[in-house]
Amino acid sequence: MSPYPIITISRQFGAGGTSIGRRVAESLGIPFYDNEIIELASKESHFDPKLFRKVEETTATNSFLYAINRLGAGSAYSMPISDQLYSVQSSIIRTIADQTPAVIVGRCADDVLSGYTKTVDVFVQAGVEARVRRTMERLTLTESRARSYVKQIDKSRAAYHNFYSDRLWGRRENYDLILDSDDVDWDSLAQIVVIYAKARFGDEIEAFLKSE
Image 1 (cartoon, rainbow, N blue to C red):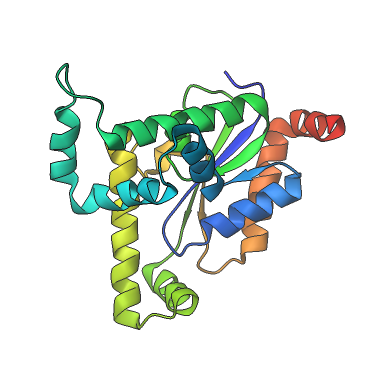
Image 2 (tube, rainbow, N blue to C red; image 1 turned 90 degrees about the vertical axis):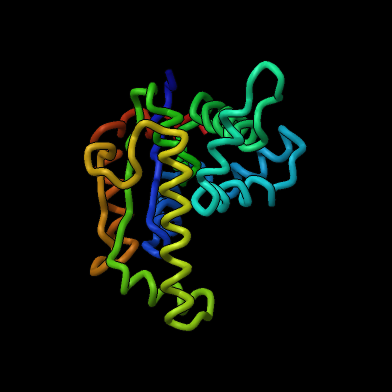
């Protein structure tokens, strides 16, 4: 059980969850982890960082084959590579939570830390049109390609999360806060999370900052 408050951020693609999470961490003065978890897990396991991303992308498109592969891990087989990668990332997430307050984006952190009592689980969403528009601008895609990409990534994130977790991705009852970024700027949404976190863990966060 972590002695430190942890904020997990789950998000639809293009909703701004990563940017909001980074602003929360900066405002609170605590570490921020997103792709950094992949880098740490890669060093720990000696697997290529690209492999971690590939597994997450494959979960939705080949979920049936992926499930068969996982079920094949018995006495005559080693643990499937996908499960090994998930296990390493989960270990990294728990290590972070045991050592410091932090904001952690994605990687099923909300479920990995479900047994920890000092967590704030946040889901960031937005309407599909807003997310398609942002994706077009960010990745320089046509509208049709951006729309397809948004749908694909959301499907992958949901499938990956739901495959490894009993907590369904995006379901209201699984989060402390659900933020809609359609008509509210990301700085303001970040401050909502900061206010909520300080209301629950203010003294503990302040104690950490003073010890630095």
